[in-house]
Amino acid sequence: MTIDQFNFAGKKAIVRVDFNVPLDENGKITDDTRIRGAMPTLKKILNDGGSLIIMSHMGKPKKNPDMKFSLGQIVDAVSEQLGVKVQFAPDCMKADEAVAALKPGEALLLENLRFYAEEEGKPRGEFATDEEKAAAKAAMKAPQKEFAKHLASYADCYVNDAFGTAHRKHASTAIIADYFDADHKMLGYLMEKEVKAVDNVLSNIKRPFTAIMGGSKVSTKIGIIENLMDKVDNLILCGGMTYTFAKAQGGKVGQSICEDDKLDLALDIIAKAKAKGVNLILGTDCVAADSFSNDAKTQIVPANNIPDGWEGLDAGPETRKAFAAAIEGAKTILWNGPAGVFEFDNFTAGSRAIAEAIAKATANGAFSLIGGGDSVACINKFGMADQVSYISTGGGALLEAIEGKVLPGIAAIKG
Image 1 (cartoon, rainbow, N blue to C red):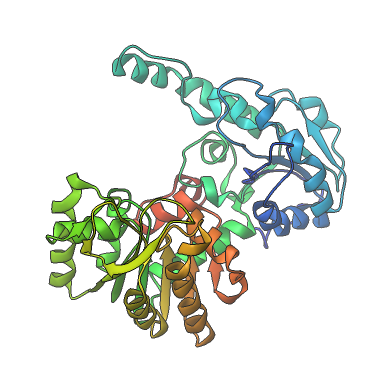
Image 2: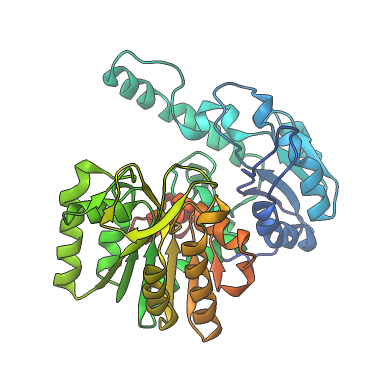
């Protein structure tokens, strides 16, 4: 069943959204992208004449309740976006009366699901041994099912619109779907768009395909890099992992971030790219700094010959040119991870060069997908979000999908 085919008139719909939005110290939302992203789904239900029950997690609370992570802080913002006054249930497991009283066109937000350990199915507390922890986790299975069953009892149908948590087999993202038949569970509009965007990049590839993988560690991206090797024409590896590759090939990297235990892995990736005919593009020069700060002294040096006491914090001018050339000619582009410490204004040039090249290629008809928190923060910082094809709301979920893993939140609905 798709959300467009379903008429919510007279039905109670429980919708899993990802309202895990960043808050400042006064509990004010600093970025409402995720709330705005869920609006088409939520409004469709209300416009059809359905009643809306919204559920989400926020943060990583370790107790129930932990008011620092209360969704009560965002009720007004959700009401404003939705155009109706959203009611609030201060305990997601004790909302039966509030749900029963909901009329068509009304909306109710449940308190943070993760106030209950059953949502994640992970026991809380300290464990003396791994065996103890495993036993405690196994003991959570039945309570987790009961938790999901209670949430399901609130509604006639279930909609999952939380791509950001689709890679987790939690009560509200996967297990709850077992309590609805195929005609009464569906993906929301945001989820449908995310699934289509991933599909465009992995299955519906227009060539050449350039992937840009940044970030500090090669170890955290290895699964994705290996899966992409069979798909891409050009693979750009940038950011902190540049220096692991430089050192693996006998270079000097000064104080730069470097995974000394992953040098063999770096050489293995270089060999695999060669064997598969993938054009692997690594940084040849960098902006080195004498300290990790925006105001550090800088010099442009070869990425494999950084002086002692200096560290590479951004891609150098020659590297930027090489990156831009591989991106501008592409028809499919995936970007995950910055080329430098973009949080410091003086070290944004590498990431900006990537963003500008992606915007140029997109204007020339390429499909570009930006995903993963830092890349999204980059594109927003540069004010170029409207110049790319799609920005994914899910960091971990997007990366696992690109790695070729089945996402439980999607499998629970699509089978």
